[in-house]
Amino acid sequence: MLTLASGLSVIAFKTPHIYKKLFNALFVAGMLAMVAVGMWSAGYKHAWSVVSRFVDEKKTAEVIAALEQQGLSEFAFLYAMLGMVFIFFLDWLAGEVIKHKEQEKPKSTVQDE
Image (cartoon, rainbow, N blue to C red; front, side):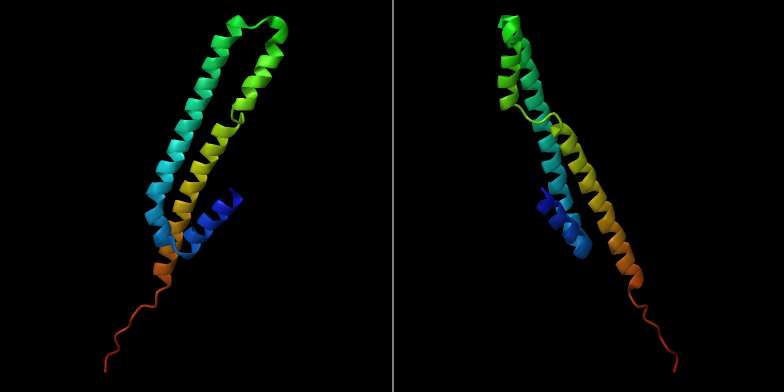
């Protein structure tokens, strides 16, 4: 993940026009990740609600441990949201770099002869 974030940062800073073109694809990928994590979490909670009725109270800890082995981290949705914030930050950064480069362009002056 760090490599991906670093690579995207370099692209946004060094070649902002390319990052602007990638933004829509990154946005869709981020949204799909959030939806997938949300669906997995909902499935996990549904599985627990169905299984909990049939589990002996003495074995509840074992069942929770078994379900957690198949589940995602509790922070997976937070990580996906932070990824989306990072994507939007890089979009803003690319825009600022583009503005800065446009302001730095030397202005052509016409000299009267």
